[in-house]
Length: 377
Ligand code: NAD
Ligand code: MG
Figure 1 (cartoon, rainbow, N blue to C red):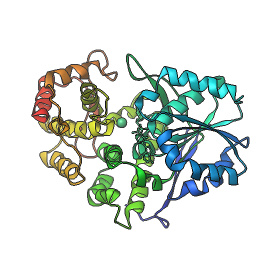
Figure 2: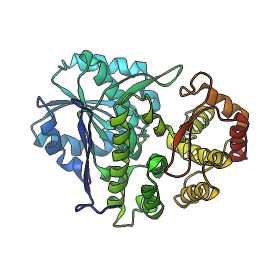
Figure 3: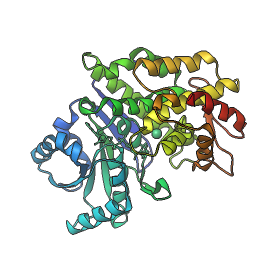
């Protein structure tokens, strides 16, 4: 990977015409938030949507920065967890914001992980027919994935993320220092999405992660923040490239679902109760996708084993058997047929060797069943 002059600072531009924006990645950014925020604001007032865990850790720092910048803030504290991405919380937030007389010139700050980013983004997309919002993601998953690209939304009784809007933020402000407080399991879940970008089309990045990825987790290393910054930067660049080409997922953006067809089936079967985090499902799903690719002659076994060994080396689950609950290959297969990415009854799989992912349809489901069976056992 190229060495930047300051390993703790990077900017990634997402070119989308009048919806273009910058992603700023800087260790310590929250301590100087006002300097990054002020150029983006039309009025000196923000509405901060966050949740209690993140607020407990970072509210005083953010509030102090806003006060220094002369920015008035209204705070909204939600309950942490996926259940917050609901119609009920969405409706209450809209009413609470309207009660505070929010105007179209105001800006919403989404301070938290993907749950807060998705919900606050959808509130911003729909309130007063659309107001601006800024993402301040605090989990690795949200820093490398959900805060970039403008997908916002909430969950429904019929499935996750089925109501929402494309609404690009005004900017994404990332402080990798906040990862210090993130539970290691959440860091690992986000790391699965980092690895995904290497597997899709960047074998150099994948190779760099094999060498350096472990340092992301090593609190005793003085390179930890530099490695995290670089990994977040390259991930955001990769996502920005795909989104710039295919903002509304009519083609290339689907590649970002590498490992997700299998992963979503695992998540659905495990029940979204914390047994399996999304990123954990994606990691196992990427191994399954590589295994299927090997069986189809699209990848060689060394590539699959490289991924498995790397996941093991950073303490991550790599097979369905690792999850620790009994799973049935047939049931997993039926979840895949129901996945929203299944078009006209044919499940789409992102397959290929490392850095050579492409969408494949019409795959022999007996082979898929064999992959699932071997991972479950
Ligand atoms: P999350 O927001 O639930 O955060 C995970 C946990 O980490 C929570 O318990 C939270 O309280 C805690 N936390 C957050 N920041 C912390 C910090 N700095 N220190 C300590 N604890 C912290 O989950 P997530 O993994 O960030 O996001 C998952 C959500 O993102 C899902 O709802 C998913 O659907 C969505 N998502 C959206 C997109 C998109 O393109 N919009 C992409 C991927 C995922
Ligand atoms: Mg994902």
